[in-house]
Image 1: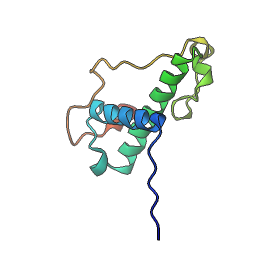
Image 2 (image 1 turned 90 degrees about the vertical axis):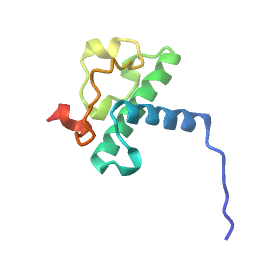
Image 3 (image 1 turned 60 degrees about the vertical axis):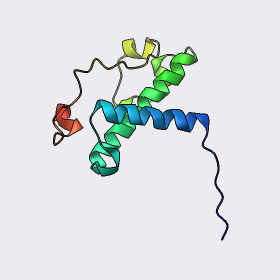
Length: 104
């Protein structure tokens, strides 16, 4: 059996780097996180990465799928795609606190 190893694309490396940033922002230890927390940080990282790429191309938010399928307003759809810049206030500080706490 031959094992073939391929180099990751630049896009994949950028997305994984951003996933790492999102995990740090929400204090998620990815290898030990619950499936729920993994799903959340993966969704945030992918959405922010898509917004970043759309912004680089001069596209609007409407050209990026909405976060977790949530419906956007027309006003939001017409806005330029922008990267999310965390203020640091949204992060959880307790290691036993789920990143989903704000949705409960």
